[in-house]
Length: 620
Image (cartoon, helix red, strand yellow):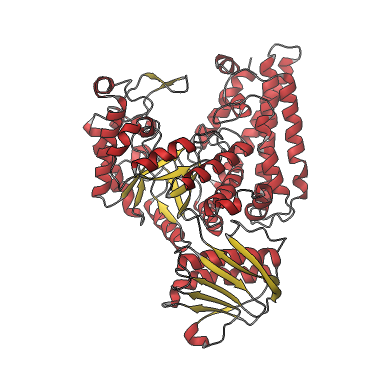
């Protein structure tokens, strides 16, 4: 028992006497009416037994096997198991029994049993597990619009991994990367998802008890639409506008909320997108409408207030969603600034309270939603974006804070977000740490709040029993702290690569010292030193290794670039510039190869252009 590392840790796990020896020529017995409801879970167990114990168990219905309990009995019972996602697992010397009241609970019981088989092999410890989740909804949201659109192979493999950790909702954040039938100009050259691909993914998710929820921004973050002539007139502004972060941005960005054409466009998008999803939920975005009131709606905002203008538009979107028999989700960052308006929201709407820093005030915002009577999710993040290797400590604390605050205030769900701001430079495996931690915290907070993250990531994400990959992910993900300069929602090393030297000095940040960049170089080398000891049992193990080596290479380049930025005219700088320019060209070549190993080509050119932007400093 001491060697088992289950993810998520179950609510109750009690050792019992003896061991169960797996033998061949046994059965997976289905006790359910209809038995077909359990076939998917049984097949998953059957495959795991073959892969990890080398044995074949056939699948049989109870009516065929009579009283013979077989090797494993999967039993639906409505009397003993009250929670619809709960299960009991008993491993006894002579048999294995999983009981649940639904096929979903049975699936989760099988997932736990498979983890035990993976770690224990032929000799299973006898035990009794009683388990059910804290949060009824435990989701992951992937950004597929800035700029990576994952291949179907990448997505399906990720769905399998998330399902094994009892994640039950998936959202693909979409701005323009769906093949809208009536709007082909918007998705041209972006390698979008087609309707048929979404149908396939929807079915694949449902078979694994995951709800694929459509996610389409409909207010802010509409640049990809408004940049095209057919939609340009709907923009709030095409001029520059001020942001809450103290920088100026160039429009267009948001739809104009007082233009009737904005809602007409949104409804057309709904009709192109929604028919391919079986879910009745729909995330309409509506976050970060930061330019509203600085363009065409300036007078309306001055007369009625920014909150009222926002709410009026939001309610129109809500009515459009309701007419299509869906339940609307929306990001709550704007409306929560106007708590007096929360009671005006319909009771059948679902607010998504997001925040990505360790100190995000979930403890203050969650009670606001609860007091208003609104259903809401807490939505922390993986901290992978704008960071290169992630921000381990920030991510863990952000995920923990969301889980505990949401649970205290009756949140209906927990959605782990994974964004791709400014080119989506981070490799997919960087996000695994956040997915693992969030899946654990959302299932059973008390039992998982002290989870050994490095061990769990290594075993369950990287399939590395040595523990090496988990430690590398944790340590490389904490290098963001070494330069000693905290950057909101990102890392200094990331921004050193994103900005030219002039742009860096224009920011109000203090550039790290020579000593700080040198310390970061040493920390990077130390973090990845154990990579050769990893023994990943994954199909893509060699690719994962390349991705982490590349990430370390990118971080080293950022440190050397930072050292040059401190003293760009020092003796020998010309040679340093040539060396860094050559190195960056090699980095770009490897980046392109790694991108195409998991993702479609759409967006790659734009992502690479952000690397090219910094080369100007090497050309002087």
